Image 1: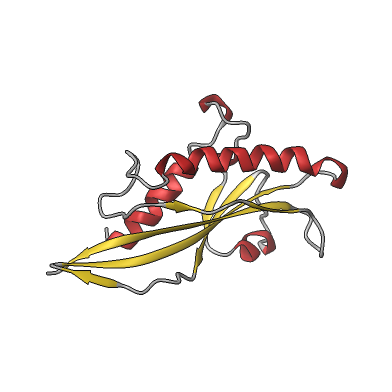
Image 2: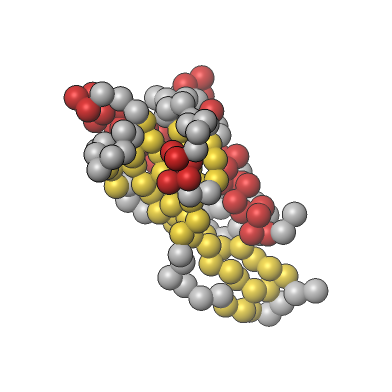
Length: 154
């Protein structure tokens, strides 16, 4: 498997650990996908909630080289979504936010046991919550992640 795919797969596997039997508030790890959030919610077979989408995001860094390794910056946006009545969305969204931060933060600034072999340090951004509205029936939380994949010369 190439290093970029390995990083993405490691993040997806980590997000899939979010379930109540593991001490989290939600079972959001049961429905984790990769791609674009808008495509997931527009699909005819909409996921049950809560759910998580690992969406590619533009990195502000450029690739860099050192010795026999090329460091390719990667950025993602983790988007968690819940669908609840408008009056009740905040508690459900707070629980999902807590779960995502707890799941990802142990890796902040250091290597985690679950990280891919050629994965750089993971930086976790501040969560941003969005209420339902503008035609979207989901409440969402978005967290930016930055890391890198290390490509070795052949």
